[in-house]
Length: 142
Image 1 (cartoon, rainbow, N blue to C red):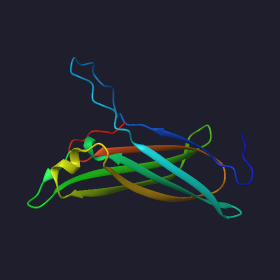
Image 2: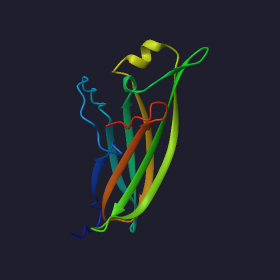
Image 3: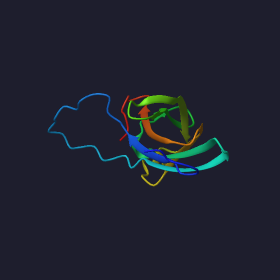
């Protein structure tokens, strides 16, 4: 399906698992409630900007203690593909370091970390893949 003009169809797929999970009798982990906010607009007739803001609750991350603060590191990867053959047209990876002064702030489920990414694309139909990984625990967030 071709999309004309200002319309852009974005499918957000948040894939978190890199492999199969084994069944366990342990209590299931709570969902992370990762939220993605996005908007897009034309910057030129043949170009548009896709802005994505990603919110992650701090209570799902592993924090390490330093002398005066707690920190966590997260790795992000965004891949955008196009067409039925899923041809990759954009890929970006980056890391973020989160610093909190108090341990209680790292456990509060209402506290979030927000990062964002701006992507320039020609108008069309795309699939959006986002992988978020806690660097310390290697846990992929879902």
